[in-house]
Image (cartoon, rainbow over all chains, first blue to last red; front, side, top):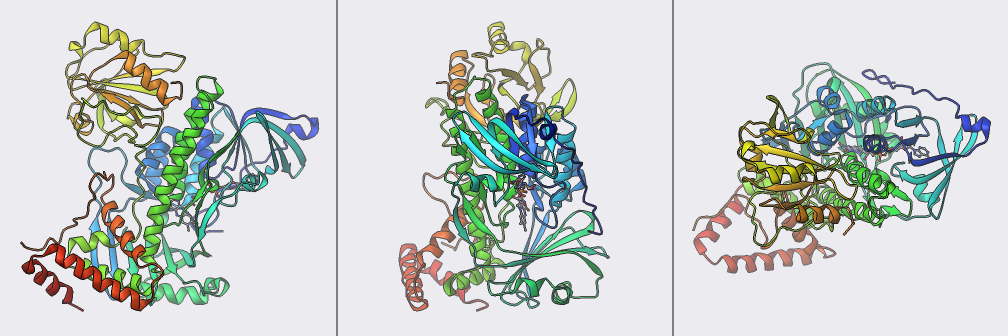
Length: 558
Length: 74
Ligand SMILES: Cc1cc2nc3c(=O)[nH]c(=O)nc-3n(C[C@H](O)[C@H](O)[C@H](O)COP(=O)(O)OP(=O)(O)OC[C@H]3O[C@@H](n4cnc5c(N)ncnc54)[C@H](O)[C@@H]3O)c2cc1C
């Protein structure tokens, strides 16, 4: 029981299949209603795929886990309908301070880049995120959420997956065309299918404490290397919602977790850290070790792995849930097209390829942070201390200090779904094929809004014009008749000036020119955007044939 | 030439999508170069590295500045 938060208890009802003895047949079952399973269910539901979502528990994440949700995750949560809840409950912070021994060596102010709907990140306890996602999922007609339903066996044969589910009232069987394993780092599904996950455990332990401050304390991130109150180790202080602060103490490998967790050992440490008589109450303490590992491939026949079940990173850089949400974002539309027979199953290989690439980037970045924070050799420690001592006076030294890097989405520039730029067309900026879209402020019917809330969920073509009245009739006709091969393509015209366009076209005004700048758009410039808001292709002029070929390529129909 | 104290890493042909990547790329290379060496071997490696880089920079004015800055606060 926490002082600031009451865990919800979700209702369990006896599944009808227990009495009837019938096998429940569904197109898709998602196992695990953590943040990633919930997100995947919401994504599929938005795509129009009904989902059975099973979880062995009946509440949200217990204790202190995820804290930071980065911009791309927030944009995805917007699509799932919980972005506002997360951003208004969460706390934003801009100032980070880095201390080495007794001194503050530098601080930074991450002023959010202007003209994006969402900030670089928001801090919020994971249980809130899950609570909002669970409430959203419960309100969606296409999601059947069954709590206290534990998957105890999984068998895959040909084109279906059979699972046995245990409840307090007995067992039943589910037969699904597709199974999505979102059952966390220990992934029972992975184990039951005899699949491997490879990586390493870090030889270190961390004590995490959630503390409720009684007095005002700034909304800042403080990171200490080798502080006097905890010599030889590192400490992180981070603000969460409800005036709860999260403190991570590095303990070293030899520490005894049971001893360290005792309040008589934790409290003096925190007192020494706060350095004064500031009052606080202990809300949660636990000790964890972490692993860096991933599965070789995230798709195995009719079983797809998402979130921690597929990959696990160290918490430095906050990449666990953030990347899991991007798995959901990447998978939903692909599975929908495959289920509808509009794309071959091969498209799901691209889910694995793209998310393995992203997982490797996350593993690399979090491993680098971990290696900086916890040097593994004497020389490595010397270099770290040298970088810290240079950081005080020199900008290049600050760039070397790595106490966790902000989670940013991968640029999927090597993806086989991209259509490369033509050699004769050049673009400035970073919206190249494979890039996650940058947001931009737009006007729609005179009202202010955001680009990212108007594209995505399906393929979109963004056509840029100066004056909408100047677009020729043939282009307008081609834009409205884009959907081909059963794959819907939403036309979006983005224009510098106001004007009228026929119905069926989403018309956004780029009055301040932010879109034109970020996308290096000139009149006639065309972007093909994937349902997960990544660039699939771009050109300097509109050509329906080229566009059709790019859609085919992005769906493995080429 | 005066010494550059701003972040300055890059690699030909490589495109970076986050500002922290170039320095992190270098730092990882540096630490990996020392992998599995004894402390004594690492010390020798560092000395050789400094000599290699110093010769590459060549300009003794710049090196004098770097040497002076490196000693400050040690
Ligand atoms: C200390 C710490 C700090 C972290 N900080 C951050 C951060 O700042 N930002 C960030 O993005 N991430 C962070 N993470 C990572 C984040 O917590 C995880 O990545 C995230 O919870 C993964 O979500 P998931 O849905 O994949 O798995 P989980 O959250 O583990 O959910 C798995 C679900 O599957 C269910 N389940 C398991 N087995 C079965 C079964 N047999 N049948 C039915 N259901 C089953 C479980 O009940 C559970 O609900 C942190 C983690 C830790 C430990």
